[in-house]
Length: 450
Image 1 (cartoon, helix red, strand yellow):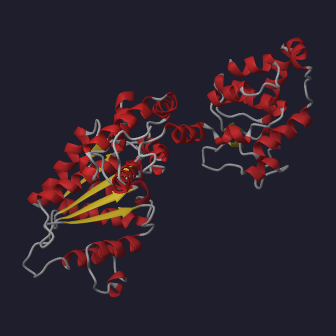
Image 2: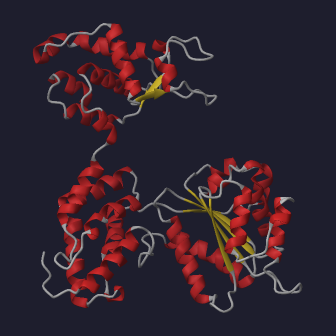
């Protein structure tokens, strides 16, 4: 829709940058939706450390995309505005990430870097981790009598940090926080609800066992509200009020369109991942220009269509009818309660159905019951496509794909026809796969829909 008011290049550029920063997580949303309770709990802990020199530790647990990092960022912004000044910071912040800091030595070096310590630490790193860490904290003092200023440690991907050998980093942080010798707060962020099981006994003994749970949005309206907050602009973004009103009206129309509304409902039902939603909506903002200063529905609809397509279903688009029947047979075994199955079980399910419906199948497509060697070859094709994968045993060991295809597996004498496997498709995906195949008999399609 053309702009009713003349829009300058600078306004379009300002709106584009402001919205993209929010969509990609580089800027905070104006407000957090349904996160008041965990926000208050995290802020209270950090504020006590900064204002009262208390040692605190806690874990923030929640699904990916639920707002854990947004809560931390909002709390740090509030503390920065209330306590810190550029000339004399009252506290320090250190952020570590399990993906980046894969061992304690890397973490220790980055802690020193973020605390602006320029002294060479090579002679310190040869000792124990606890001694080196204490040495770094003591360098924050301007003289021996001064108390070390509070330090806030934010540990992203906490579960990966818990997999470090001996867990020296976590033990040292929790021990200092508990002993109250140095005012530090340790906040771990993770999506694993069983993260406590990863901690060693000595680490658990130092941890406060305070856990703050972050829930995903509970309603579709809240999910849509997050998208509106990210896409809406205001005069604070460097645009005129008229342009902001037109832009926001077009955003509301975009979110109400059938393609985007259906996509939001799909994401809400399957995972409620707000980051995936916001990144998909970025396609409507990337093409903003003076000629088209408002989000357009066509690029967003095309992006939504690509996102809705399943990569697995694209791989299986041209599988043979026999391979499709084996997939449906595995789905039938899952529906009757079988969590694992082998080729013999799958072939027996396929043969039983085909024998029972042979007349209807023949009338619909002149099919026949394939012999076992032919069906085994089709089954191996599904293994090569990684649609069927080995079933993991209780001890954690599993046959690889090559082992399943080979006559025997190393250390195993079970014939390949009897090795347990699992189907990597949801029942709904099998139904969709069969519905998109006009070349299969109607009775096979009905079998998939059962």
